[in-house]
Amino acid sequence: PVQPPAAQTQSAPAPAAPAANALPSTPEAAKPGEPAPQQSEGSTGETVEMAARPFAYIEGKADRDEIYGAILGSLGLVKREMDKAGLKPSGRPLAVFVESDDTGFRYHAGFPLEAAPPDKASLSDAVKIGQTPSGKAMRFQHIGSYADIDATYDAVTAYLDEKGIDAQDSFIEEYVNDVKDPDDPALEVNIYVLLK
Image 1 (tube, rainbow, N blue to C red):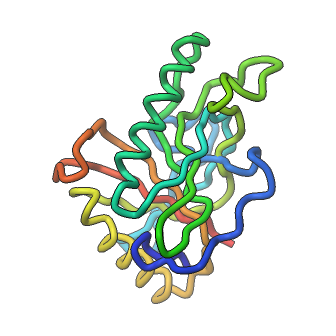
Image 2: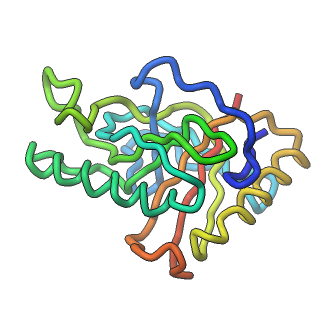
């Protein structure tokens, strides 16, 4: 089962290649013809089908108490490189957590794109082009300060255990609104848990 950031103690296996680091398709970014999210039997999680999309991202690592600021910094770098290249995001910013240990996280933070730039595997030394994660996932919502997100992950883990849902170890956060302060109670985050 997925463990909350504060409770994770083992490293999740890193995806085999950057192309495996795909991101979720959200209702706002869903393309015509994609299935709409279906409500699961519980009111906590919603089952969605995530389509792989081009993804401009930066690889980062941060301590647990600095993760939100590190992700925001990474997103700012990716956005500047996208602007230089004339690329527009096709959805909200994302962070794919690919590994964790007792001290922190390794993540890929960036933006989904309408189309990958032709003949480019990167926009700069730091900003790479890959794919968002894809497949069946459950979406959960966190509203409140980032400091309180561990409680949401605890609830997600309890929900998955109660329903007997087998999930992968990595998880994805989609930042619904632009909140710069991790203590801002207006922060909204969609949490995606990929299913096995």
